[in-house]
Image 1 (tube, rainbow, N blue to C red):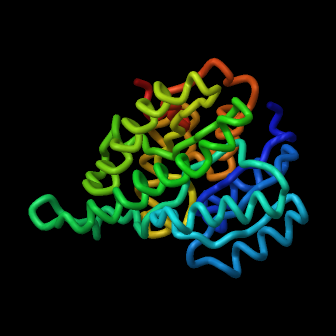
Image 2 (cartoon, rainbow, N blue to C red; image 1 turned 60 degrees about the horizontal axis):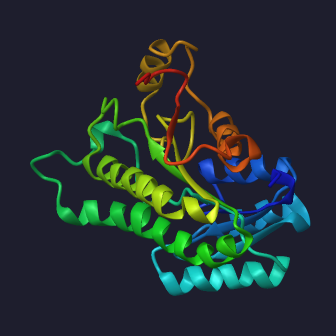
Image 3 (cartoon, rainbow, N blue to C red; image 1 turned 90 degrees about the horizontal axis):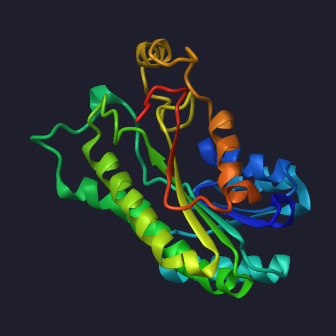
Amino acid sequence: MQLSQQLVLVTGGARGLGQHLVRAFAREGAQVLVNYLHSADAASALAADLGPAALAVRADVTDPAQVQAMFAQARAHFGREVTSVVNNALAAFSFNGNARAQADAIGWQAFNAQFEGSVRGALNTVQAALPGMRAQRFGRVINIGTNLFQNPVVPYHDYTAAKAALLSLTRTLAGDLGPDGITVNMLSGGLLRSTDASAATPEAVFDYIAANTPLRSVTTPAEFADAALFFASPWSRAVTGQNLVVDGGLVRD
């Protein structure tokens, strides 16, 4: 299915990386569902800017009932089923290595918050999308991950553990849903220059990352968002269960 024929859900789509993902899909002619939790003004402004092809809907992705209601609202508004889901929503987090919780002090509550946002949220959206995707025998799930698996340059224990679990879920879902024509992949970046989550990152860290990439630059949210188009496009129809790292070549394994 061409991107211009799709209805794409982007969770956490009102700001930061999410808004770049929304704009990338809209630019290619897709209809886009802009999910948000707290950023009502930003979501409304983004949807208004994109016009009738976009709809802003509030839902807490950790709540299955709210997710189901969001899909129903999208179905009623667009008269069709969601074809692609981008699981981008992130539990409140700041990439500030100087302020991160240390190994001897971090509590399980921090891990649980990240698992709820990354893993439970993705499970809820996939389960809500499944009936429509199965009926069409087409679906694309794109989970947003991190290159901290391969390169834990800053040990964000809770965030990285949750994203590692999301990668595992990506691969098991790929195996389970492939016969239904649904692909499930992960798109992983490093620090992006810049999003709300990376706003607290010192410039020296960005400079260090840039100096160690073949491109000598830090990936921007817009560059990262463009890579997401591949996994939703016809060109990736034989690709599933994969983790594509988009970080300027910093991680190469």
